[in-house]
Length: 591
Image 1 (cartoon, rainbow, N blue to C red):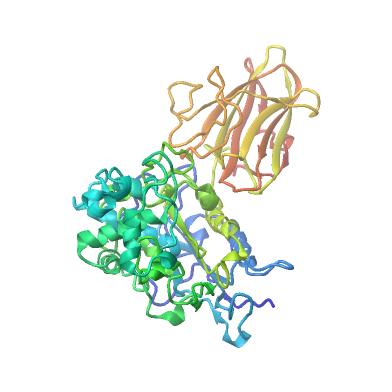
Image 2: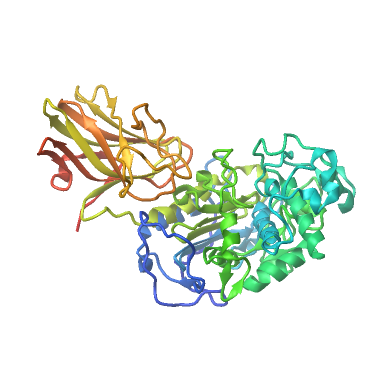
């Protein structure tokens, strides 16, 4: 049976929310990223994509896509019964969507009578699952800021019992970045009889890998940090989070063990342990067995409360005059401490540059986390944007599949809405975001005997396995030869050297200093100048962007395409854009 009751809000103001109407801010171009933090006085306000210069079309497409996952495919299940999502840019809430149901199922296989279905609301309270780890991490960084904890100090300095079983060299940083060597998980809830024995099991657990040698995401890291916070503060973790984080920020609907159970989104029907339909209690069995308060899971929240937290971090740790962290501490949250483990970029508690759910917002200064129950938060400091998607994807069963596609779509909608404009008054082409596809931009060219020089501007922010090839064909397109490319950023002193920071732009670097196919997210988010030598003869010149079925980044944009032989101009895209044949690229003409 398929039924959808929804309320779709296009960034409108909700009574009682933490937003107010104010004059619109102007959006920055994607290729002109912000540096530093937003002004500390920034307070979220309601607006529309157009009010801040964003393209509303990708956002509307994303809304439709995310809503569609609530409808089951023939013979299958919906990805989730309902969701609440929010997007914001430069202090403006540009989109929200509320759709589907917070409670729909009686058990793992049966629906409730339709009259008992509970629709989602803007203020539905979700079990955040592992997004809870961010709250614990902030609580630890507050201790670091106060000088009560040292980032590189052994955990056993503060929790002597943790030093058992060869863990005496594990530091606070190792726990926060999941490089401790811990195993990923233990069945604490079923293997040990009470809270004390469960915590003791974590303290006594030996390492699976030598400390600092492997990235392995582990709940045990954050369970340990939760115990550390309680020990040093002399309060329970929920009291610490309430008094030092959610309370100061006015996050009234955020905390552990929610009281307003009728406003919570249901999660799973659990037969083992025999909990029935879980609603208003933490879904994670280990956190449940620890009384609902643990360092790795247990926090419940709403989309609006998480928006306030996101903006507070973009502001450098403050919101409405209440400071939870200083600017240096926020910088630690988004500093990659895992350079030794490429692809597993991690700040203190926050994941960084994870294209698999951050998609078009990905970058070295993009932070976030996901939660097993179907939650995700993506905060892009470079564009001062964030995308929050909360679903109840484990209702009624965790076995119904991953929702990563929806997470990607929600982040992509906001990322693709950020405008890319050419440097100067030039036409540009941009790839269309499509999985498992090949997009081509092709132009015929006659190069004299002495050869020619090709130049163009490029923005390329892609998944590592989505690759741009620049190539030529002298036989009408039957075979193609790659062009060695020289990349530089405007202002670089030496042409032919690409300043690579925080990632890889070039998939292959050749011996002569040129590059082969281009992929990756370098974090620059600005136009680069590309140069290449063209062989003589009649030929086709082609930009070919090939994506796989996995994830997408922001994609590729090309502008200012010119070919010169001696003093003669062979090709000028601004003069003859119609000479280019496109498949999967869109053309923006200069005004």
